[in-house]
Length: 365
Ligand code: CA
Image 1 (cartoon, protein in one colour):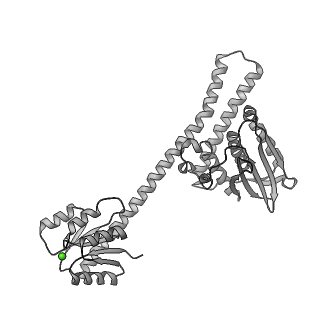
Image 2 (spheres, rainbow, N blue to C red):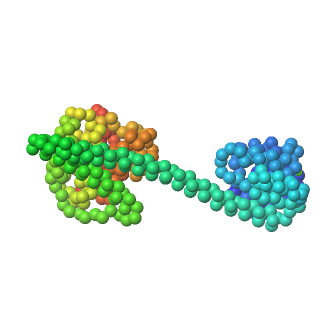
């Protein structure tokens, strides 16, 4: 890509000489003769480098340089052309942010050498600015993510602590109440563990792929396991998990652990966002060579601006607040990672009649 150089020089001979030399060395040159034209071209074209004469018909190069130093935008080096070799002019030029000066008359080699050096420095500075910007974004996103994780871990932890307090303070409770409390606390602990494992797997996947151990599984057995895992929260919300399995999709060869955790994450979200008394529908069907699993709820649905990002590792960075993505960010990022590892695809769509339908397809084998 050719660098754009803005050349502001009122002496026609020097202007044309410098422009020709630079153009013949592959630079794109825009030349003009006044300070006003120069500033307009600077604002319109945002060149990579400016060469400007000190004495101009409508002002001077120092003012031009000063005015290019206001506002935002990438750094643009300025080289002065000057016949005045006096120290004061040079110092004034450096004071307003110029990078260099060339004394007229100059040799072609010197002009080219200085232009190249300053373009090289500019390139490094731009690269640094880019990296800085990326790091800043990453930092913000990581901060959001860790806020979200802490927020999500706090709820089950509070529930466990509450349960322990109840058991401690009311020593004598019925056997049934005691069992219920323990089962709720156990469920809360299971979810914390699930989240922690998801976070660890996502972190590890940056170094190496998730380990996969294939075995033949019975889909119906998995569904029963899922229902029993979620029994306490289903009872609390008066929600049922209704599962239907296509006779052709009763078995599947996959990684049991990854597969079950995908289901657990998606079902957990569905229950979380489901209104009380509404069923969660889990369908297993065979479509061509794929086995398709869909988990549908009657919750508020996924806003259109989130649909493309909801499986991103840092999905929370695209949302308005941590609360908006709370409880889905890490789990869904894990789901995509696990589904991709198993060679499948995952997506979300609106459920007809309201709610979300999360679905993933795995090769039927
Ligand atoms: Ca001049």
